[in-house]
Picture 1 (tube, rainbow, N blue to C red):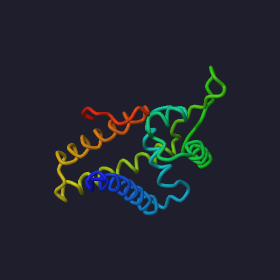
Picture 2: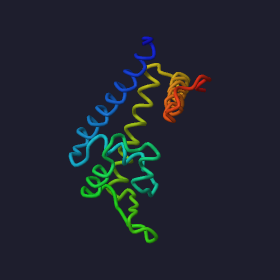
Picture 3: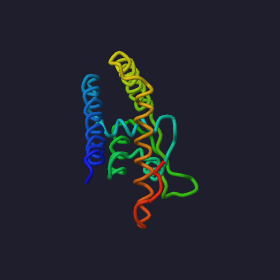
Picture 4: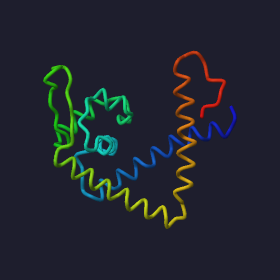
Amino acid sequence: MRQPYYDSILLIERLHRHFLEVLKTELDRLGIQDINNVQSLILYNIGDDELTVGELTARGYYLGSNVSYNVKKMVENGYLGQERSPHDRRSVRVRLSDKGLDLRDKISNMFERQIKALDKAGLADEELIKANETMRKLERFWSSSLDYSGFPVTSAA
């Protein structure tokens, strides 16, 4: 295996874990014990939307395999409200409660502090834009390989 490709795979996973630790530290700093870092990131991603569990999964907001469990825990702890669809009783829509909106605002404030710290650390927007472009190319490459016909021969761009 070519080392830069393998290093990228490991780095993406490591960055994700580090960010979740940063989020956990923020929750601890705020004295929030009834939601975990993964759940709070799902909550942040829901934002002002009202979604089904299936939509959470389709949009990539789930961050793990057990979406239903995380949604259930957030409902139990008052971060999400849920309502059965009047058209399809099997479908449940979730939205942020007032408690969830408050936590989303706190996470937004953390992001703003981090953005300012990035600027001071010399990590410019242009560098993040370039890194995001590269990760999107990798995402398209991996997504295109999921049709089980093999990896694409053409550019992943």
